[in-house]
Every structure is written in structure tokens, then in C-alpha cells.
Length: 194
Image 1 (cartoon, rainbow, N blue to C red):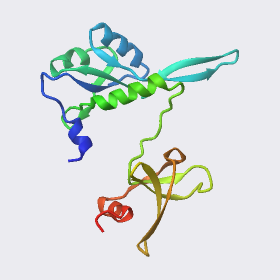
Image 2 (image 1 turned 60 degrees about the vertical axis):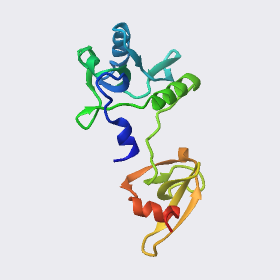
Image 3 (image 1 turned 30 degrees about the vertical axis):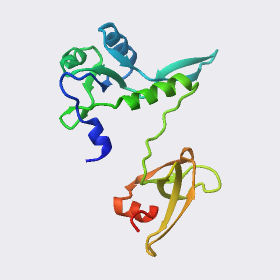
Image 4 (image 1 turned 180 degrees about the vertical axis):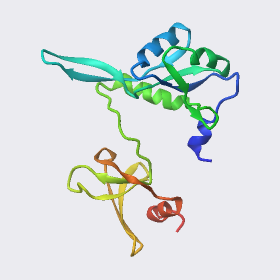
């Protein structure tokens, strides 16, 4: 079981924890308002976006994660939450509602509070196959690894069993395909366990 999976296992019945809710399309703000009125602590992260109409431009707030918002609740509150108009379900982890670690909620809160224009970014993890979008390495594909606090692009010559890597800013890469490295491949590329 991974650390992330362990962190998302449901909390005990009486413990208040953060959960993610899946809502109907464009009902996030309504659900947030109703849950707050019911006395729950909810959090709808929004991003400020510049929308252009024919006659004017206006800054509007849109949900950072469309169709999702977060609520702090205990198991005894789930019935009240699920009967809220616009709520489709509590996001599960296995057969129980997933618990979102408070540190992740706090990180998103700080990001949206302090960032003028926050953007949604594709979720990349170590081992994902990626393609460089711009710069001198544009078009090159490889695997994303993290060594200390730096991301590196690893390009492999599989038939030779050799690889080379270069430091890269994760903002310049995008996911390329569905293949990720397994643990053994990652260890070899990172020089772990040699």
C-alpha cells in the first residue's frame, strides 16, 4: 500500500476530516453556499480568469477543480451532505469516503489565496513518460524523475540498457502516453540500490 493510499483511508466514525465531493456540472458554488449555510466548513478553490466578451473584458472566478469541492465532516454528517442539492457523491477510496490530508487542503488554500492567476496543471508524478513542450529539447520524450529537489528528464536507449538525464523544469513537460516506470526501472535510472 502506498503512502498516498494509506493517507486516504477513511477516518474513524467520530473524527472530523476533509473529504472531496463530486458535484453536478456548474453546481460547485451553490453546493459550497448551501453547505456553509448548513454549518459545514467547506472549501471551493477558485482560479481567477480573464474572460473576454465583445464589449468588455472581466475577471471571473471559476472552480480550480471543476465539479469538485472539499468539506470537513464526520461520518455522522454524510447523510446531510449527500442530500444537499447538486452533490453527486463523496469521492471514495475503496468502499469508504477518501480522507484528504489537511496539509494538502492547506497547500491549495495558500496557493489560491496568494496567487493572482492560478492555473490547473496536469498531474505528473515521478516515473511518468513525458514530452518536452518548448525550449531546446522540444519534442524529446523520456521519463520524469526527481533527484533531491530537482526534476530530471531521463532518455533511455532500451536495447543498450543505458540512460541519460538532464535537469528540466516540470512546467515545460506534458504527459506523453500512459506508460510509467515500474519500481525496478526507476531505481536503475536514479542509481538507487547499486
